[in-house]
Amino acid sequence: MFMGEFHHSVDEKGRIIVPAKFRESLGSSFVITRGMDKCIFAYPRSEWTQLEQRLKALPFTKADARAFTRFFFSGACEADQDKQGRILLPPNLREYAQLKKEAIVIGVSTRVEIWSKDLWEEYYAKSEESFSEIAEGIIDFDL
Image 1 (cartoon, helix red, strand yellow):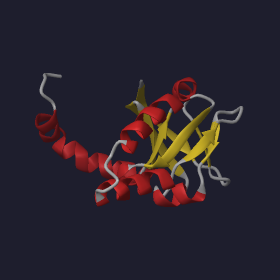
Image 2: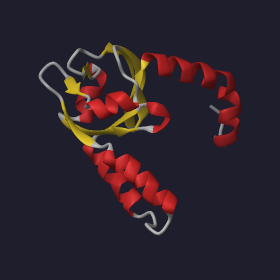
Image 3: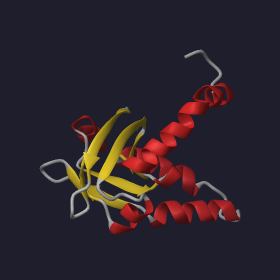
């Protein structure tokens, strides 16, 4: 399980360090793609395979299903960690996530998300205000 928040830099070649806590669980090679809310999602191979199976089961006759799978899979690529635990983020994903210099890497249970520092702070501030309301609407048990 992935959890926590880590601050990292994107170097001039577009590489970012994978937090040490996440390296083993992600594996030496994993999948990254466009995520929701202008971030990058990173999935271990096993989780990616499960997600791929669920998306394959969507009815291709539905326009929304086709649109989502196109968006999701067209941005996907393999990410291989080097000996320092860095991965190269392709230009199209860096542009999508507006990643320049500072990044926030967060663990979200079954995946890792990579955010630009500015977008994460903006998202967090908005979500923090309504966190209790969001929880009441989706969670049926006491935390």
